[in-house]
Every structure is written in C-alpha cells, then in structure tokens.
Amino acid sequence: MSVRQLRNLPKGADLSHIHPDLHVLAVPIGHLVKHPDNPRLHPDANRKAIAGSLRGYLQRKNVVVNLTGQGLRLEAGHGVFTEMLEAGSEYIAAAIMGDDPVTELGFMLADNRSADLSEDDPEKLRAVIRQIVELDQDAEIVGWNEEEIRNMLATARDDDDPPDDPAPIDKAAELQKQWQTSRGQIWEIPSKSVPGKCHRVMCGDCREPGDVARLLDGQKANVAFTSPPYASQRKYDEESGFMPIKPDDYVGWFDAVQANVRAHLAPDGSWFVNIKEHCEDGQRHLYVMDLTIAHVRKWGWRFVDELCWRDTRNGMPGKFVNRFKDAWERVLHFSQEREIRFNPQAVGNESDQCFDYDPATKRGTDRNGMKTGTPAGGMKAGIALPSNVLDIAAQSDCVEHSAGFPVALPSFFIKAYSDPGDIILDPFMGSWTTGMAAERECRISCGMELSTKYLAVQLERSRSAGLEPRLL
Image (tube, rainbow, N blue to C red; front, side, top):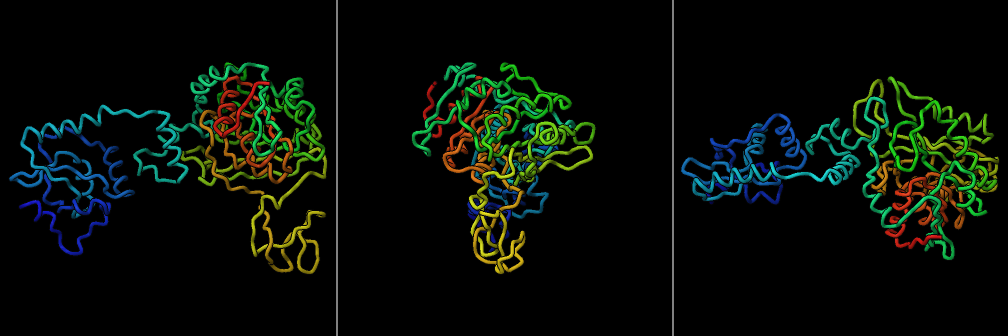
C-alpha cells in the first residue's frame, strides 16, 4: 500500500485523540508493527506518564515509521503506539520514511540514546513544576505523582513531610558579592511613585532596639506587615546567625520583635503578622495561638481581627496524617488604639449588589437611613467591601528566598490601612516583597534583614524594578 493510500482516510474518521496540527499525518494504527529488535523497555511508570500526556494533551508528537514490504515498522514512538493501541485509537499520526535496514536500526537506537543522555536543570524543573501546580494541573498528566511533586517542591509545613528546603542561597551569595552588603549597612532606594522620598533597607536585627531606631530614623510607621520565621519549619541563611526557633520558645523570642514594632508604630497604625502553625504527631501546634494571646494579655495589644489568606491554587498536593492539605494561612491584625486608619473602599470593587458605607461611623447605611451591617434596605450600586477571607494565589514573586509570598498580600493591607505617602515597616523584609508592594501603592517602606545575602537580593530586586539603591 502506498503512502497516499495510507493517508486516504474515510470521511468522518475519528481523529479527536490527535492534535489538529497532526491530522495530515494520520494513518490507520492497524498498519503499524513494532520493531522486533527495539531494546527499549517501557515500565509501568513510563507507560502511565505517556498515557497521562495523551489523555491531557492529545497526540502532539508523531511517531516515526519505515515503509517496508511488511507494512509500517516503528523506528521511534513505541510507547505512544502501545498506549494509543490499548486505548482503542483507530488512527495515529506518523512520519513515514523509506529507510534502508541500517538507517532504520541506527535511527531507532539514536532516538533511544539521545533521550537517555538528556538531563534536567533542577531549579528550572522546580520552577516549571510549581507553575503546573499553581494552575491546578493533574500531576499524572505531566508524569509525576503528587508525592513526587510535593517532595520536589518541599514547601508543605508539616512534621510528616520534610521541612522546607533551604533558600536557593547560591544565587543570593553571588548577589552579596556583587553588592558588597555587610552588617549595619543602610541603603536608600529612591521611590518613583513617591517623588523625593526613599525606601530604606538595613542589614540588622529587628529584635535590637538600636537597629530599628536607625532604620526608622525618627519616622513612625502606619502599617507594619511581616511574615516572620515559622517555628522550626524553615531553613534560612545560617551564616547570618539566625537559628530556627523551637515552638515552645517562640513567644519569648517574639517579645522583642513586637516591642520594637510598637515603639515605632503610629497611634492609629496596624500590625499584621502572617503565620501558620505546623503539625506535630498528627495535630496542630499551639504556638501561634499562644502568640496571639500573648499579644493581648501579655503585651497589651488590641486583637482587631484574624484574616484568612486563602491560596487560590487550593494548596499543595500531598498526603497528611489525620488531616487535609493546607490551603490557607492566617493574618493576625493588632493595633494599639481603638481608632485606626482604615480605608476599606480602597480595596473594594464596584457592584450593584451593595449597601452604603459611612466613613464617619464605619458602618453600613440602608435605604431607610438605618445603621446596619447587612443590606436590610435593599441592594444598590456602590462599592462592595471585601470580607476577611482573601483569595490570593500563593506563588512568590521572587525565587531567591525560601519564604516568599505574593506582592498582592501586603498590597491589600497597605491600601486598606494606610494613606499614600505613609511609612510601611517590615521587620523581616526577606526578598523585598513588602517594599515592592509599598512602591506600587505609593507608600514608603522600611525593612530590616538579618542576612547580608538577602539584603543583596532586595537591592537586586529593586534595581530590576527600575529603582537605583544607594548606600547611605
């Protein structure tokens, strides 16, 4: 049978399992035979990955066959052929060659061997896998099971899983050499969104009153937002002198942090702590609850609210003892005074299903003028205010830090609890995410960082954003 006859398919042939761009290469699968001398084996894991790819993406890479007197003999694509045949496919996309026996064998071996000799860049692979997870892609379609992906990303904070990987410190170390950062330095980063003002970052200890005083330089912050080190669950730059804190020691360790924040927070300011407790022996640890209680009963803060930051990726895949996967983290909101700066409409959205908000009383007003927390007087057009559940995808905008979070998270609190031009403090600045949020929202950030390496990451990130740091 000629090539033309092989490709002359009946009208209405079902090619739905083949990518449309390969329809012109379709031939009846019954005309194909495996090469009897092919040494390549396809274990169950390999076959499962091929089947998953075909199921998720259709056939989008043709097999290669040789036209012989016995029919179409496979040179490359034995695994794809096997899975499509078992799936009941009647047609397969194939490139048809007219090779002599030596070329046929040679290409078959070369195709097998070239795959054997390839390697993955581990960091790039992790980054791509992370994107796949964030898009809620089925793990089997891309060839890894959920446990393999979880171990590869190593981000789940659970005693039944390995602790987070150390930050990719090699890149940060390179940046440290480039920027020549050292302990005690203060860098200014001129803002573009607030002309004439500068963000400030310092390599120091947020638990030391003198360091925090130098960083703020007499200024008062209206919002302090941070994601502090989680107890015993993450590894940071050990050369900085920081060591993981045991859960039972966490409140005592945090005392100095909150005291320095309080000393430099405006009376109408707000203090936000993004944190999530891990599990031990099949149950949640209580140190975050202890921290919350200590803020109020020991240190005199007002506990304004507990907000839920919900990961719109639906959390990380994995199997956990006695519980389901994490898909949210808490953000604790504290203040010193009852009256705080609060701009809820700055984070609202236009809607015809809302009720009035009176900034003076900070309460809703229905159509009858009654003060209410619900739209009892009927819906009307206006600004719909968000709830205390925030839906934000959890991917970090900076890959040079193990504990990064999205810019959208601090942006929400900056817009809702401060005014343009206000000072935003982050005692654990990390990769300058809070600084990036402040710049985008026309505020000025002041950040502390213990690690000289991660200070360099901050400077590089600000430069990448079009800002030019300068050593004070």
